[in-house]
Structures are given as structure tokens and as C-alpha cells.
Image (cartoon, rainbow, N blue to C red; front, top):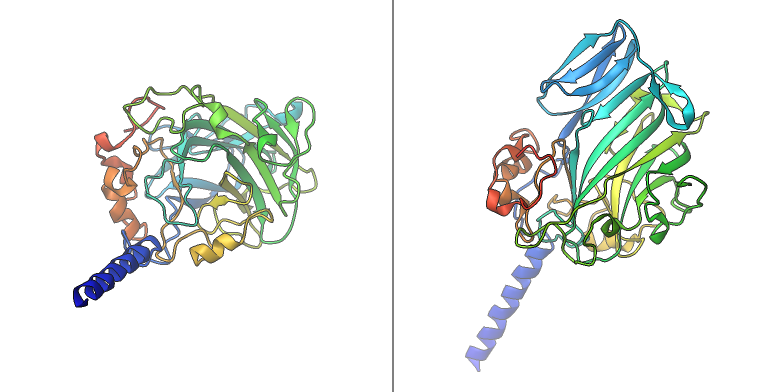
Length: 381
């Protein structure tokens, strides 16, 4: 009888330990609580004359922008050069107007990598491959350095999610309730209405999402439909499977004429703050209420708020500061299914545990067998 009781006690202890680990009490990584998980930093620059800006690799960060104050979004410890322009070439704007300046992220014709986990509010398997896509942003300015419109370019790469319905959206908001968006255009139909409630117009145009509480810009309502073999559950996350071709697309957004603002007030993937206008990116899994944001992202009115009770936080991070969304400003390979990202990229652990003060180029050293390599998306590694 004593042996049975002892067995029961040991079993209960083991169950308790497993539960504590899953809830984030026992951490895989010891991450500082104040780490915001940003791999990019905002650099403020004041130009005395019209200039083009390039990074250390020769990629264009900004094209023919006039004298003024600007924000650039760069990887930490990166560098750039300012090249004065004799003339200001004109570029075509949305709707047929003329816009003279463009700022790019991460650079012209280059993609950053965005990776999401779908097991929110549970911690998940940390392979960061449930939704993976390349992300490129073009910010179109007028001759007074104000943001008039922008284009988001998406390059679908992989999904290791068990959810059949997956959406991706952007949001534009400030520290106070304001609407900025006038019209949205999609390069395809985007399957927007599969998951998001919008009013559609002509030429693949549509409104911001109805009932979200601020400007939510659906990018796709069916991420899987952008893959050639979308009948498969796991796509481009296992090297033993045939790779899938993908359909890239873009979404262009025009701002209301009375809501344009100086580009120096624009931020990317930051927490809401007064005087700044932030562009957020998030995913939706299975049901509209299951939004997965970057840390400190702003939940919409359509979010299922009891998820915050389960996660024990309200900022889209776990109690030990793990997250469900990560961005690299480079085009990097994602881990194969069930391979933790810090095992696929050993410097990732140093980067996270240092709170971003070390190993910012965490993708520079990898275990190739742990990464998806059956298809290439202009990767740097």
C-alpha cells in the first residue's frame, strides 16, 4: 500500500512539473522580461538635400527623398550611406497620381522573414514555421515627406500549422482612435472574405475590416490558397516532402487625404503610442478571434480576450517572455517541423537571452539539416 501511495505521489509531481514547463514557469530560454524581441531598430535621419540612401550591401533603403526628417528601419549594428541626388525622378503612385519619394523595408526588392506559431496561448513547439512569409514594405511619400500610401509585398513560403483556415492582416493605428485608410487594392482577390468581413469594390478593392475598432487591412483570408499543393496539411516544412510553388502578392493602401502624416511619425511593429502611427502585422488561425501578434501588438475588437487569461499576460508574450511571432530583416530559412528555432540557429539563444544586445545576426550560424532546404526563396543562408 505504501509503494502504491509513493507511486501516486511521484506521478503527481511529474505531472505538475510537465504542467509547469508547458505553462512557461520552467523556461527553455532565460529571456529578460523587458526584451521586446525586435531585431530591427528605428534610425532617425535628417537630410539637408534630396538624397538616395543605400545600406552596407548596396541595397536601396530610400529613393530620391528630399530634405527633411525621416525614420529608417534597419537591423541593429548595420550601416548606410547617403548619396545626394541632382534631380528627383518621378514614380507612379496608386490611383494614377505622382509621388516622388519611396522608403523601403528591408530594402528595395528585398524580403524580410516573418514567422508565426499557431499554438497561442500555449507556448508551442517553438519551431516558428506555422506561417512563414517574406515581407517587403514600400512607403510612398509626397514632396512634403508625408506618408500618402504604401504597398505590402508578401511572398508565402511555408505553413506547418494544423489549421486549415489561416489569415494574415496588417493594422494601422496610433495611441488614440483614428482612421487613416481610404482604399485598399489587392493584386489578386486575396480570398479576403474567407475570414475577414469587408465591403468589396471594383478592381480587387475593399474596405478595412468591419468591427475591428481601428484600421485592420486584411492581406489574405486563406494563406493556404497561395500554395500549389494546398491540399496538404504541412507545406514546405519537411525536406522529405515535395516542395510547393507559391503565389506572391501585394496589397496597396491609400490614406485619407485629411489623415496623411509626416513619415517621421511612422513606426513598424511597435507598441501604440501618442504621436506615432504604427504598422502592425498579425495572423489569424482557425477562427477570427484567434489573433497572434508580435509582442506588444494591439488586439482588435474581434479578438477573443479570454486567450489573455490562458496566457497569463496581455501583451502576446508568455510569462517567461517567449513569443509567437519573430521577424528577421533578412531572407532566412525557417526550421523544419518540430525543430526548435534556437536549435536550428544556435546564436538565437544568445540573442534572446542577452535581450537583443548580442548575436543580432543570429541567422549567420545554422544547422543546415534542421532547416527547410528543399526550395529556395532568395535566402542569404
